[in-house]
Each structure stands twice: as structure tokens, then as C-alpha cells.
Image (cartoon, rainbow, N blue to C red; front, side, top):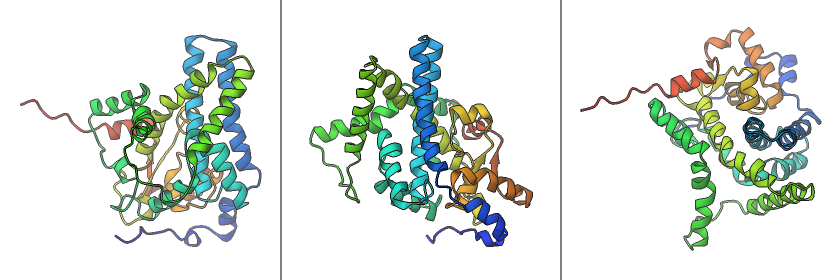
Length: 313
């Protein structure tokens, strides 16, 4: 199928307005990377300082969401908007963002740009994430249960490694890359630092457990919010959904303005830190009626879990 329709920003924004929303900063991107790691370290320190079930659950949720945040910043780098210097943009993505959570910019970038080119069409590599919806409430909660209990993590991360060790052939990567090397170097650094500080167990309890539980859950919820049941039409303002996240949702589900996804698909080279500004401008200009907007993640859950259970025979 042909590529999806694009929005020409010149037809919407004045040159001055477009300059405001498209301008990249040399320091905001690195500051966001530092912020993600600061929250991870702070949440871990909170549990170590005051160990109890409540602080542990809080730490797992905060760290898992910032692991998603690191993946989001890798996504930002895939568009070249994490830093205006291309080499620094890619280096931060590979070593400080994607690498520690198992990502690879070289593999992800062509994959993700194809998603933008063919959003919700048969050629879209992410279409499978949104096509199953709506599902029943029971089906939705079963998916979340698999996520929070580590089953999704095992299926996506552990099982392929086991199969490879057993000799099952896997397709070679399209782009030569060594993401596993970066991943294990990052794990060694995290384990080494926590061990040197006297908390050898922290790598498992405060890094692997969040990665195996909360990270998959919020990743699924993010995917649902972005594209499930958007009723894609030829209008580019219908290709993705924006979710108006409240502060708690931004803290535990949607970091780094990722919930402004309609704006991102319309203007995919606008830095994430300018998406809220773009959203406000679009609403003031009357484009809100054309956009897919949800009032929070509870509304997303209701929509995606709205399929009625089949009646018993």
C-alpha cells in the first residue's frame, strides 16, 4: 500500500511557531538521560534506605517506568532528536538508553521509520500490537498478568536465548550490530557498582525485577494507548492517539511526553520536549476535533477491554 498521508507543518504553523516546536536543544536531551538514571538511582536508594514492601513496590514501578523512559529516549534518537549532534545522538542512544535495556538503535531505527511510513497498514511492523483490540476484560487482564509475573519477559528475552543455545537457527540481523555486548556491559557496570557499594543483590532486585515485571506492563499499555482502536483514516491526525496523562500517570506509566503520540506522528522530527507545546498550539488552532485524544489511561483501558464476552452455549 502507499505510504500514509503526511502533514505539511507550513500549512498549520507560522514560521515562528514552527521554529519554536521544531528547535532542538543541545542540553535538554542529555538532561533527560540524566533524569532517567537519577530516578532509577533515587528509587533504588529509597528502598535500600527504608526497606519495606511499600518502598519496594514503589521502586519497582519507578525503575520499570524509567527503563521504559530509556527506551523512549532511544526512540527519540531514532528520529535524530535526542541531540543535534548526530554522533552524540546515536552514542547516547546505544550506550546510555537502549543498550542497558536490551535495545539497538541500528536495528530499531529502520524498523521504526517503517512504522511511521505505513502506520496501521499491512506493511506496518507494529500493526500486530494494536490489531487484537478490543478484547474482553478477562483477556486484557490476562495479558497484564503475564506481564507483571514475568511471563512476557521470559517469552521475549529468555526463551529466544535458550533456543539459540540449544542450536535452533535464528534469522541473522539485517544490520550488523552487537546489542548483546552493550547490554551485558551495562549489566556488568550496574552489578559492579552496586556490589562495590555493598548491595550485590540490588542488580536483581532493583534492575532485573522491574525489567521483568513493570517494564513489560507499561510498554504494553503504552502501545495500546498509542495505536489500538484509533480507526485510522486518510487524515494523518487519526493515525495515533494522544492520551492526556495526569501527573501520576506520567510518573508511573508515560515518561518524557510519550503520551503526545498523535503530535509525534504528525510531526515526527519535533523533539519530545516540544510535543506538549505542539499539542497546545494545535488545539488552539481548532485541530483537536480531528485528533484522537483520550482523557487518561483509564479511558484507554475501557476502550481496549470493551469487547463483550461470548454468550455461553
